[in-house]
Amino acid sequence: MILEMCIDSVESAIASAEGGADRIEFCANLLEGGTTPSLGAIRETKRRAKINLSVMVRPRGGDFCHTEEEFAVMQEDVRIFKEEGVDGVVFGLLNPDGTIDADRTRQLIELANPLPVTFHRAFDMARDPIEALDTLIELGVQRILTSGQEPSVFEGTELIRQLIERAGDRIIIMPGCGITLKNVDRVIAETGAKEIHVAAPAPQASLMTHRNDEVFMGTALRSEEYARYVTPVQNVSALRKKIG
Image 1 (cartoon, rainbow, N blue to C red):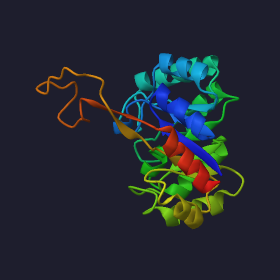
Image 2 (image 1 turned 180 degrees about the horizontal axis):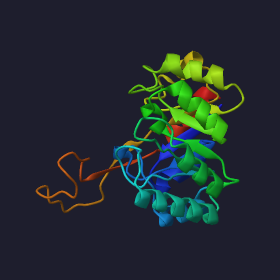
Image 3 (image 1 turned 180 degrees about the vertical axis):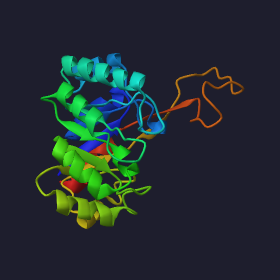
Image 4 (image 1 turned 90 degrees about the horizontal axis):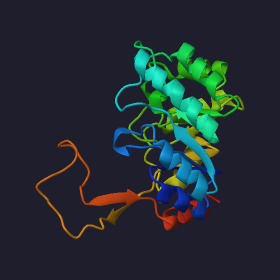
């Protein structure tokens, strides 16, 4: 059973490695579902954490229908991360009609080659999951991250199992979204998955003793200003122990 941790900091990457995860998906802005992390964060992770490192390539939050300028940024990010020696890249592109943007996906796959490619939860916004699956298999994507086109894996269990059965050995279907230590066994049993994707952060108190509670750095929909979320080693270790 492959355990992939979804993380957004060097500290969480180190903890994932020490806790026994097989792979990390490194993102920024998890509140937006993950965007492209900084090059500095990736370099520091490679220096400090001995773990398979996949990197999110997503220039913004929101939908997955990208402009010409955004796609150019994605191309450049794939080139840069490949040069940096990451172990895989993660991205997803859709056409306005909800089909897979096969042309641009193919271009990014060619740029990433020989790195493996994960098509992320843009898949869950596709109009037809079977059509999308077949397209991604044809394109040569190695892995699909999905909640079964539902808010969490549990609502999407039936579709995930169908996808796994249809995919066979042609592509990996990796459930993700809403998996916890309490329910991970059930997810595995009900889907037949061989890989799982888990985010397991915990709040860490700010080091600040002086605090201005009248000012915040984001919009009205924001995380707490004086708290940060880091994945603890014990959370990863507990998952590793439970799934074997």
